[in-house]
Image (tube, rainbow, N blue to C red; front, side, top):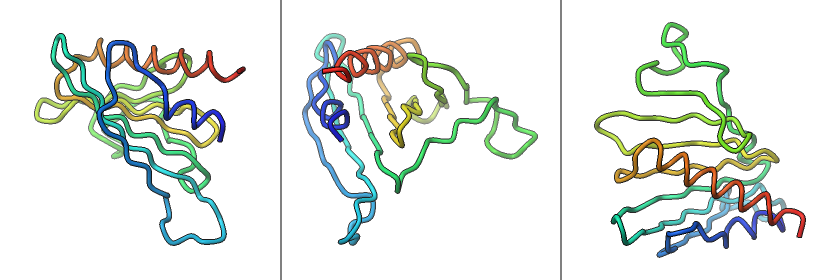
Length: 143
């Protein structure tokens, strides 16, 4: 939980947190904590961009499923706009579709998944932001 709190307050270099909403994964669970979903919106002034961050944490969320590869013939997802890769040593899947914002979902481990989504960032930019975020988080884990 301590690591989650640090990630919630993480400052992404060059970005400003403009909104945050935290909600339990199972709102009516009174006796057990199944985890939470944290929604954050960041903005950057130059060049102007918006970044949506969604963090899921807890046993109710479980681990993010990242396939070994993307194969359209198996029916999991179409191969065209998806790429399985590693970001900061963590398995991830990147979605790039011409009519949708770019999205990157990272299996951080310990039942934590980090999703970054933006209509104004390139593939390279969103990967860089994810690397910086994970690197900053790793550096705070031992504190």
